[in-house]
Image (cartoon, rainbow, N blue to C red; front, side):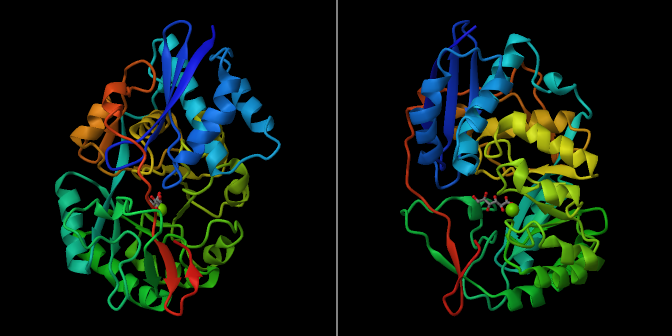
Length: 408
Ligand code: CS2
Ligand code: MG
């Protein structure tokens, strides 16, 4: 069996999805996602210029050897661009493998460990009252877990995860007005003074059953993060996400010494080498890698297994940064993983997105039910894809009030 062709498509409704389609000489094809938010043309170029020319003619069933060939075969390894590009190939090869076996992908890992996977939604508000309304909206839809972000009084601009718009998902739409990012101003003191009481008010309003998550988006220094986590203890958070910048694997030691608040980290990691110490030293409780830019199913499964040895559960990244193909790969891992924790889920299923990526996965009352179709359970409509092309966009950048550049 041979790979005969592979094509990359860039574009989508309100997003630049990077989609790979691999064809074989037996008519079976596989799909993969290489979307790297706001840097989408780069994995596409890596695929077109380096990987695809080497892929043609290989046996698609040898997904492990193909992964090793692209990883070890590149002297300059890792990084989100390369890992997103292999991630897409790897996803597509697992899609082919499961289709050849006429099985849903989760069967290739060991079958189902659960019927539905717990999801969390994103609630957001310009102020606490707007956030409360946004939380109610998701609770009414049956969500048992909600991530909460709200504006901080006196903060000079909007900041991460906070929407001033009526649409709850608005904070996620890339700014397509151009390649130059808008600037947000951040003030750690205001944030640290305001958020603990705000989170406590949410706990009081929604009761003890709601699983409350909060994302710091890498903004605190290790000592600040330790103090913040300690102050949040009475809230009973499900998790505190990315309290410190992710590059420093030792930064969480101080937090661990001062608090038992569960910590989730990893959405920016693209290899096991960026989280092995965090996992082995049990400095986190949830690992947040995404199948797309953490090197595909082959590599993420290894991270999940390592995490499982250390009582760490999964909480895969699920922002609209990834396409429904990544969500599908994660849905299959979530169905299988003995150490599954939760899945981030942003409502992406606009009619346009469903038309581009017809899917047989199901979301109901805050749970995701994996597809039983052979393969990933998501298709890609090439005719629909003709409607879209690449649009330059950007994330904001963050500065302190004196102009110092900070972490987005
Ligand atoms: C966010 C990320 O979902 C989250 O938890 O922190 O989605 C992040 O802001 C985006 O992926 C950036 O592209
Ligand atoms: Mg996050």
